[in-house]
Length: 192
Image (cartoon, rainbow, N blue to C red; front, side, top):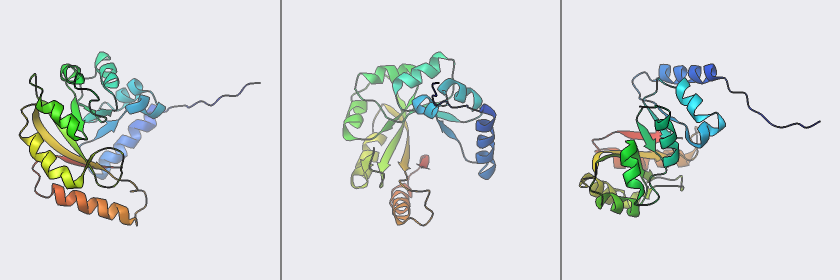
């Protein structure tokens, strides 16, 4: 007899979880991360179950294209950002928002003249996966604010260990991000 692992996904439970999140902070906007086939839950099925969210986040442009091809009209945020300058045309055609992590991505946007994007600048406050370092964040913000390909700029960071409520790293990350975002006039997001 052969046994294999399988997952049973309860879309009603996913909808319930969204309702709980929204009840905790009714004024907050919700971006559901459906990258990696919604972490194995089925991207299209999960997106359908979470139709009441404000936006969806994906890792790759191919995931954004799959959602658009399925008729998804929600705002889409490309968490991984573009990996080649030539991806800007496709991203513009799909109408996705971009996460920007580094100087090279900013330079590509500065050279792009065929549209304007909503951009999330990811600040690395301690996760150390993606994002610009805090010591160059102000320069990155200034460059993106003056870039004609950017119609709206938002800031984000990712907490490394928010599950531990007494973690000093989380406190330092929150402090660093708050310092940068204190006078910032756009949207901000802190995720775990």
